[in-house]
Structures are given as structure tokens and as C-alpha cells.
Length: 123
Image (cartoon, rainbow, N blue to C red; front, side, top):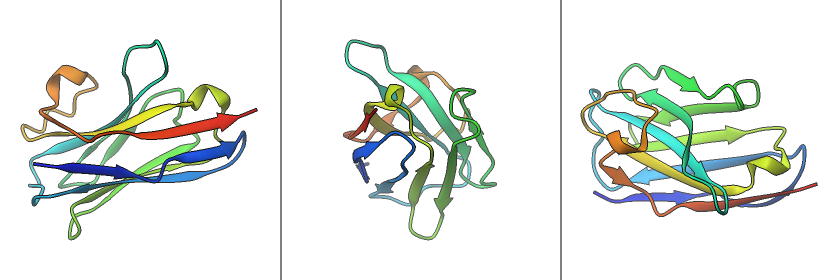
């Protein structure tokens, strides 16, 4: 299984980016996927998660009103639309797949990870 994350870049505070995560396999409806981020010197933290089949998403409180998570089942691709970005959002963003569909916010519950895409938000 390979997850290819893309879409990161440099943006000014208040700007937007759309991250993508393409899977090399078919994602089953029973699976869940998530986005995490890791800032320099910090632990990896949960950003958003989604039930692949139903498309129901859950976002961290810190991004609830600014980020949107979605997926394209036909393309086996996960998205994260990030609006009104803040400098504290500077991090490497990782997508992750849990074939057991636990809808977890813990890094330990995801079996497969993308390589990460860097988002830099300047003030």
C-alpha cells in the first residue's frame, strides 16, 4: 500500500491550500483515513478523520471552522481543504489509512502512512 500526499506549499496567513492523498490500492468502505500534522520539535497530532464508506468526517477543534475533509471513492483519493491558514499550521501533513476503520485520532491505530507534504504559513 502506498499513499502519496501532495499539495503542500508556502502560503501567507489567511490563505488556502488543498492537500491530496492518492492511494495505490482500492480503499474499502470499512476503512477510515485521517490527516495528521507534525510541526518541528512537536509530536504528530490529529487534524481530521473520515469514514471512507459514508464520507462522514470529524475535525480537530483547532481546525473545525477552517478545514474540510473529503474523499473521492472512485479515485481512492483523500482531500483536505484548508482555508484561513494560520502560522501555527506550519507543519508536515501526513495522510494515513486504517483498514480496520476505527475512526481513531491516535497515530497508533493507522497501519499505512503517506510520506508527508510540507505546509508553511507565513505571518
